[in-house]
Image (cartoon, rainbow, N blue to C red):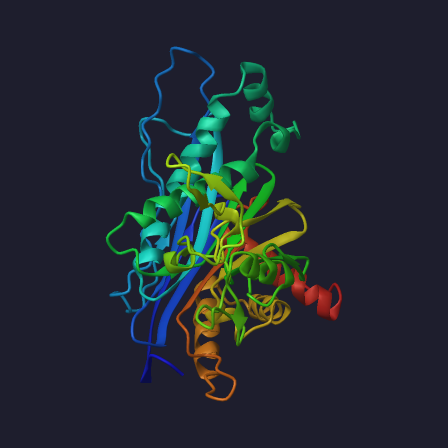
Length: 398
């Protein structure tokens, strides 16, 4: 089974964070791995929209909570009722737009890549979106601030911003001294009435919409036809469902041994200054690329219940539909998000099986409750409990 311990580390790090419009619980467990290679990010922040040329630019502050710490395996239950991002100089106003960014990063070959990306990606994403917004004309800014206006996706090119950020961070990581590892990245951005998901690798994000699963990402596996063609076109091969018999996923940050130029690249020749033709492969066409797939989903306030963002250590044990069913079942029993995270992690580690190979990976899961229409998380849990019971037994709840 590879680098595994005979006895798992079953201590959990479970954190609950509450805000007025959204709350989330993060659960982590090291399991049978020798170290915790997963990381996460959770940013609750605002983007200030400047409507005046002489308005001073707001300082860019780190609004991201602490990412996964491989040294911290004790169980923690933290209840934060205020925003993770605190800015006394610029309280939320009519010129501010809320933004939430959540991400799970499943490292391999070490924790260097996952820690690096989780620490920088949400900040650069927020800064890039903010810059894009503040470069708009005054008319477009006012449209964006108007809650009744539905032109957000016409005004902001989210796919380009996100892809540029992924590429830029991968480039920065190449020059990091601890760049001999790789990591997946699944990131979900909640902005105005939209849920924007970017995925590179086989971590996953799903949405529960009235109990039905809405997939907001798709796993990047080497055997997938599009991935397989790209790998072959760049001189690689797939064996045992792995890139060059090594890597079990086809998109990731880092993994630079799969991104270096070599004589097998089946790409265009370009002339150099010495008139000698050299091969050049665009980063989107490398054997292992960091280019994310992006899915944009309109937020249905009365139907969308919660999001789940998790690494493949969770998805190896649960199908998407089964996990949504389990979470809703626990909500119907009146359980809170920390209890549910604790149960899921316990179930995953109990499924460890040397024949199937599941249950041995690091495990990280974020459950995000979408309770903008409710007073707080407690009311959302109560409403969800009654809703699920009514679905099962009819309208008998009071």
